Image (cartoon, rainbow, N blue to C red; front, side, top):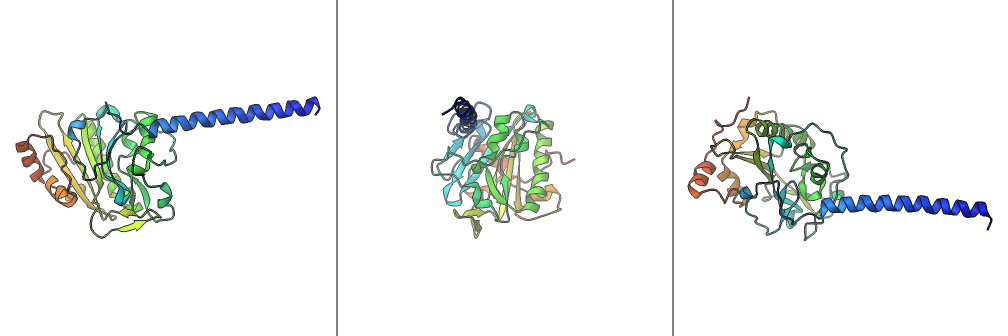
Length: 269
């Protein structure tokens, strides 16, 4: 073997080695985001976490969730959206990743491919733009649910923007959201991911000296109706889902707040 050939082989080995090391670093970074599930969070007010009907709660850095294995998605995702979290930073959109913190196995993103449904975020990437890690972990498959594109980009997106408005106005809100996982639902993919017929979003504000809550229940369909027409009581959503959403509140306060469907304390301007 001549010297030129040896130099060429050495150069190839160096290039392969560098590529392999960079790939290893990327994998380690990805796993660091995915495998944090189960750790106690420091940036979310766990006082307001709902009950889990599935017994499988996963804590990520920027949100918590209760995973429903029969439906291959979260029954709820909960997180605090502070005023300081709001940012206009645009991070590069990452690939969806299977959430390895889900012990029963989270659904694969391929279930959504050619299904006719969006991979709808429950905790929106737009709510976690304060860091690359927080943004990227919203692309774990445990945080998505099948959503009709017109619904996802329309009335649901409008509600997500309103939540950010309230987070800014009230110096932070705590959010619980998910699909109603019962009744006769379509499924998609090889793992039979359920397609909810309704989605809900609940907010509680405990930062302004007067605790207040608001709940939305939306049919999974395109709509041009104003948001306030979807306001219901927390009790209504609890009866549909079997979830106790704010169990740590004082019983008298909880009963009063959850029975009301008034939105007079929330600005819709």
